[in-house]
Length: 224
Image 1 (cartoon, helix red, strand yellow):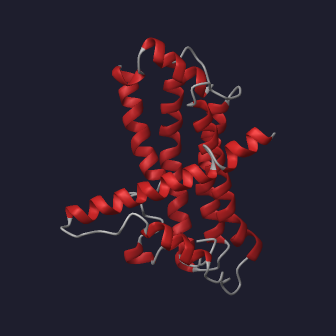
Image 2 (cartoon, helix red, strand yellow):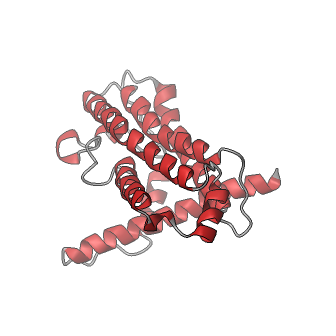
Image 3 (cartoon, helix red, strand yellow):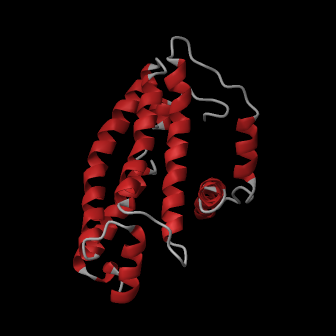
């Protein structure tokens, strides 16, 4: 029980994935700045931003369903942390997994989008509702291709749905990426994950130019 708790909270769960995510965001911002002939932010800028948000007040919009509005972002964070912990444990030298953890990963990665839709819909903001509608359509567009990509990997790994066994199979037989079906599944999954992360050009649910952050418009403080 203690080991599972450490895996969830520290490595490869919440703390490790949060640090890795913040550093990845810094690299993305730094590269974008360099391409535009700008200096870009320092490596610790994202950490300062997080600390600033943690110190700000959480404001509830008038007429919002406070419980669902507040719990939605924490639900998304919980599922992403669980997914990071499961994936990280499967990639350890001695994999720690369970039967069907690949299927659980697919379900967990679908929940943040649902949580975003629920949170935006409960805010009683028309711009957030439009963003939630776009997020729903986007999720319906990318979930099926992502699932087909996952099924392709499972079929090519002797039908296994355990992450550790899939990784070990490719270490023995070679990466699926070097086959036609594996390469197609990889490219499809890469595009779907970009859409799932809300990166351009799949940032329609936020669309800061027209929806003023869309699904996130009413969030502030810790939930943001």
